[in-house]
Image (cartoon, rainbow, N blue to C red; front, side):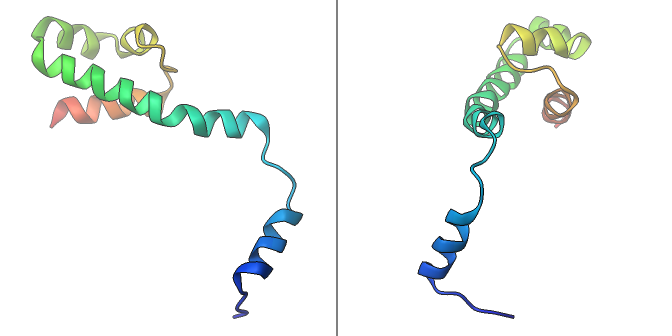
Length: 83
């Protein structure tokens, strides 16, 4: 295995093309999306009516929170509410 010092690694990394803008934006959006998922789960744990709505239609809860309603986010909510 080859070892590289920090300067060599910096040179190698700088030779790479920049990340696509949509990747950069997605990475920036992750913390906010995670916070909103946590807020949905917290509210669902505190409010039984809201919990029933989230369980019945998680896509709507995600859309209301401005979070993309893809399968991974739905699964996160389901797993946390099943705990």
